[in-house]
Amino acid sequence: MSINETVASEKNSARARWKQDPEGVRANILAVALEEFAANGLSGARMDEIAAKTRTSKRMIYYYFGDKETLYLKALEAAYKKVRQGEEQLDLEHLGPREALTRLVEFTFEHHRNNPAFIRLVMIENIHQGRYLEQSAEIKSLNEAAISQIERVYSKGAAAGVFREGLAPLRIHWLISAMSFFNVSNATTFSMLFGPELHSAAGQAALKGDVSEAVLRFVAA
Amino acid sequence: MSINETVASEKNSARARWKQDPEGVRANILAVALEEFAANGLSGARMDEIAAKTRTSKRMIYYYFGDKETLYLKALEAAYKKVRQGEEQLDLEHLGPREALTRLVEFTFEHHRNNPAFIRLVMIENIHQGRYLEQSAEIKSLNEAAISQIERVYSKGAAAGVFREGLAPLRIHWLISAMSFFNVSNATTFSMLFGPELHSAAGQAALKGDVSEAVLRFVAA
DNA sequence: TTGACTGAATTAACTGGTTAGTTCAATTTG
DNA sequence: CAAATTGAACTAACCAGTTAATTCAGTCAA
Image (tube, rainbow over all chains, first blue to last red; front, side):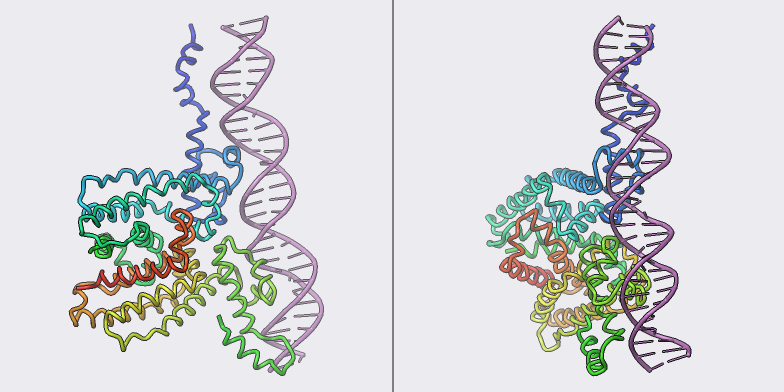
């Protein structure tokens, strides 16, 4: 009377009950690595520390990822993918140009704020002169969408006469990114040097308003 | 750093044969350390590498600075002092409010561009959550000037009716800093992801114009 | 149905190169 | 001389990556 049959037919739960969960282990390692690299940089992060925070062992990290740099690269790619996926939630098609742009700016501002670990990885990449980003064809392909989204909003607004002519969408994107990114990336030192008021809840709300205002005035006819 | 100091101490020892130049050696170490820390981060920089690039030895670095973290902190302080000194060159008193603000924005934009190593150190500090900046009372005292300079320009403009009321100078400063800083800090990854055109000579000129335009439109009545 | 077999997944202990920091004696300067 | 400064060689800790042995789940032949 087949204990064996029972076990065999429940192979999913049998698997879950005991061990052997390669995908879960991989994902767990990547999540921990993202946090550790974001907190300490590539050279500052410690493999033993990462290992200790996973539910598996150091040996398994090497088993799945080979070496520290590869782990870093995979964590970077995973972070990019996650962030870009989040961006797809935004739908601007049914809005007028000004509303659409306001919405885009506010969304971008919030989205940066909600992904500080990602922001830090990008900072770290810049310190390395993009040595790892460079190796990832995958990441490079993900960025057209951001520009074409602005393109659509901008050309609609320019046609309607509410936005001035002659602005490259890329420059608008740059402006929005600059402020949204800096708000997170430099929060610590800015607060230390100039006081924490802009990073309180009220301060952040005001700043978000300022950023929208600045972008809208910038493109206004 | 201390071309001045070096020259001064060279004058002293011009006749007297060689050696014993503590100030010059110190300054030389700091200058090298700034570059190395900016290029590699605190944990990424190597003391032997720094030593090799100075005109003195690793032993002397420990003699003067004690340990790696202290060296980093002193390099950070020296970098701040140098940058803040550069800012004092700007005189806006004789200009009208709009011209003064344009001038301030363009100067800040250029000044950031001319001090990439400093920018990188600030990024690195942000990754460390300002752990070292925190320890330096000296640095914190240097930043009132930036705000009060904007305050003077802004209140003149508001009084004249060309700037709208109700803006905190700190928020204007934030806006200028955000764009000037991001332009340097994220140049590498931004170019990789969106193409290098904004970081060519022409692109930078356009961007500088955009930043002034954005700030002026933002404060305009 | 069982038991030997396979390959993937996992563990603990180890290794060797690297790197921050030190020792100690020698040299210079006042 | 005594205090400050310097060089060469050393050391102890650290840390990325490895070794080698083990466990587990499924497979297949008898």
